[in-house]
Length: 115
Length: 114
Image (cartoon, rainbow over all chains, first blue to last red; front, top):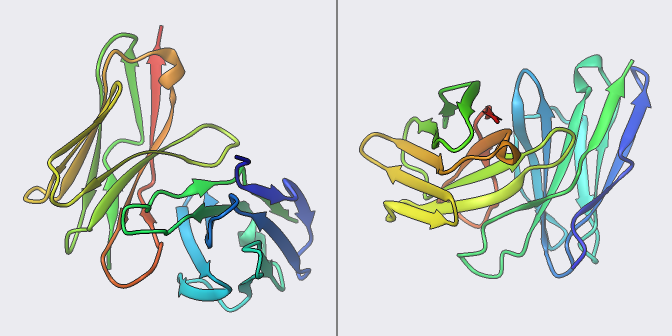
């Protein structure tokens, strides 16, 4: 079974621009979560989508948004980029078939650098 | 707020010894604690999950304990090898409806010396 894939793997943008990152979950997984990882703050939860609906959202400004498509693929968008948005953005999928399927499978991440 | 802390930023041990990593949480008990391994430039990889009503869980050379009185989880790697060198993250998940939100600790960088 193919793992979680994220594109692009690396991205360089300038302040004020916007960016869209893409995530394809493991086949059959309906839950997709996004995390931001920085050296100072560690891994922080951005939001989670399940069956095209946002189920939960972390403490990030409205510049961070996402969506999920009917095939469970997900995108996240960051508008008006700031230097502090430079981070590794990780996507994770989960089957959520029953209460025992809580483990999340992470993709390799997208390294975003804002200059 | 819900916090989760990993005591050591880094841990150096000799090959063959047991590595013990600590994860402490504040406020109310999480329903589940998960442990992940992360290598440089890669996403975290799920290792073990322990529920609040379980005291211990094992998988090969890995063992996790959960002490709700101390609000602490310990993660052990026995007979450690240089290939075990990585950052290990603990994460909490609470009851509270259908959500996959995980709150991660900052991680412990384990270095196993040959």
